[in-house]
Image 1 (cartoon, one colour):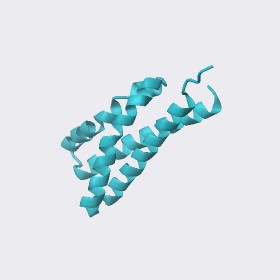
Image 2 (cartoon, one colour):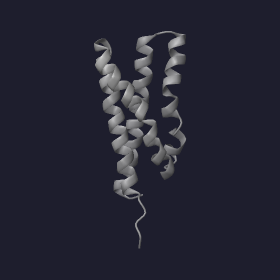
Image 3 (tube, helix red, strand yellow):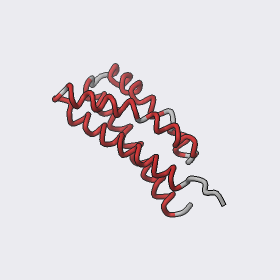
Image 4 (cartoon, rainbow, N blue to C red):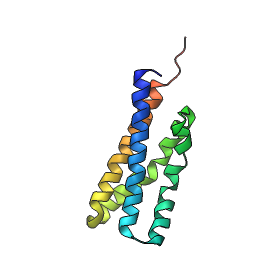
Length: 116
């Protein structure tokens, strides 16, 4: 793998993992119990769906993973506006969702097929 592709891949995996950890921690901070763990898992399902394809560097998975970012962006913006007590978690979620989206787009640009 070339250097830009490797750095793009690392960026995708890092931002994906950080967003996943933030979403789970945010949900567990709302309900620190076994039921909260179940809700945290449910909240993380859209991020868990592309996990294996991202690890294997499947380009098509990176394409549709951009759609998995939208729920976290929407929920984060809504919570940042509506709930001042949770604004820190919501802002972290929005920032990481945007970073994950940008990393996906960067990976797709550096791996695009060029006509010869």
